[in-house]
Amino acid sequence: MIQKLNIKVVLSIFILSVALFSYSCKKTKVEPENTPPTEVAKKTTVSITSFTIEKKNNPQLINDIVFEVKDNQMTANLSKFLFSVVPSFSSDASKVTLNDKEQVSGNSLIDLRSDTVFSFFAENGKRYEYTLKINWNDSLPLIAINTDGAVPVTSKETYLKGNITIDGKGVFSNYSGTTQIKGRGNSTWTLPKKPYRLKLDSKAPLFGLAEEKDWVLLANYLDETHQLNNIAFYTAQKLGIPYTNHFIPVELMINGKYLGLYLLTEQVELDKNRINVGDGGVLLELDSYYDEDWKFKSDKYQLPVNVKDPKLANADQLAAIKANFQQMENLVAASDFPKNNYLDYIDAESIANFLIVFMLTDNEEINHPKSVFMNKAANGKFVMGPVWDFDWAYGYEGTEKHFSHYQSFFWTGTKAKAGTRFFSRFLQDPVIVNLIKQKWAAFTTSNNLNDFVNDWTFILEGARNRDYSLWKRGNINYQMDVSALNNWIINRISYLTTFINGL
Image (tube, rainbow, N blue to C red; front, side):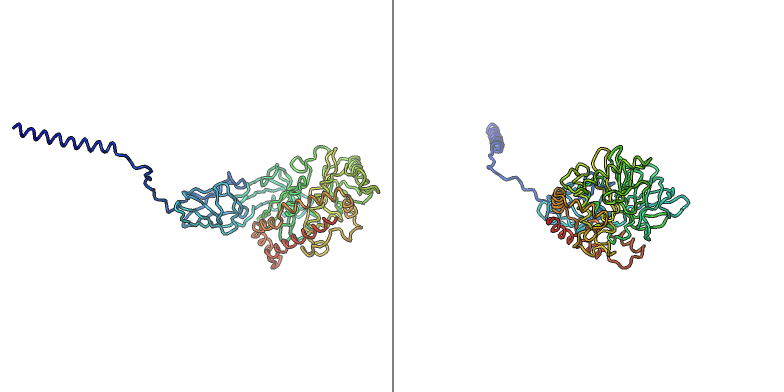
């Protein structure tokens, strides 16, 4: 019995010892140094959660635009105004590229007119391509005006009352209100497609512009490209000419009838949100139509000076304006010009900028003169501008064909005209000539007018073709017209660079 018990005890002790030894070995086992962790397999797929054009990164938007992501395509409906955007995207991709250039969500600017294929890379480097499919809407903002009783607009003198609505097409804010409308223009009023002037009953910031009552709808009937005024305004803006007009292309309906493509812009007038020269300021228009209520012919050059704004109360006020103008003109015409103090009375930079716009566009209306504006604060100098009316520019005058020639200076052979004799005088002043040289070099170096034309060509094409079909303008090819404009700009800039450097 004792012997058997001892055997059991021995066995128990042995088993316990083995267990304790095993446990001790596990506790004291030394792990090898630098043992790599278990490698996690890299993802081979990509998931795209969203692709959006957000208003916060694209201030030109009214609302966010969300793309549908499906079957390696990202699809959205988009106005042609919105071809240049900053997209935002959410995915688990390790990298996103466009044309091999890495893209940053909410930061990278892209041009949606190009074939746009995004590459999303999985963690293991595998590429997944997604194509942006844009359903372009070529409609421009629509202005609809209904006159009371649907009375047709046939007069430049008498306003008709009516209602106005603006469909911003998701690009601009919508608007509705009451307005008055009449015809406007001189030679343009005689053409089949009429220009109009609007006077809203209440000031409004149409298309995000400074709020006002008075607006203009330019018909651009003679302009095959519907860009000639745009280019002039853009150039003036880049040169820093104060109070330069903005340009908003729209489509117009009056009393339910579609009238085609128009350019909405500000009425040229004195106001704190327009030409803001303060109390006592004046806006003059040198124009051979000579059709304002208050006007005078200057003594030295017989310039037809129309007082555009403000409305005068008596002849004494007109006499004071003429006296100021004559003081300046006398110095320009003087035998000691330019070595007198004429620049104390007219702003030198405004002369240089104004002449550059007219030289670039070959606008010979400066010769007559027609539609040539000057403004002046009560105690300030005369300032040229804003620029206006370029339908007859770009080689049109004398040929009735735009882009017919580019190698001419706009007052060659026209020395007898009042505007020519006055404005050509400034090129005899080295101060003005040097300013023109400096500003021309800076403008042509930092601005590409052909890019500007091509951007607007994309936006305007549908509306322009609808316009030409409506007005039976024949089988004119829009792309050929734009090509002629682009070539003319290239040649004109080259010609003027040589001409200006030789002044």
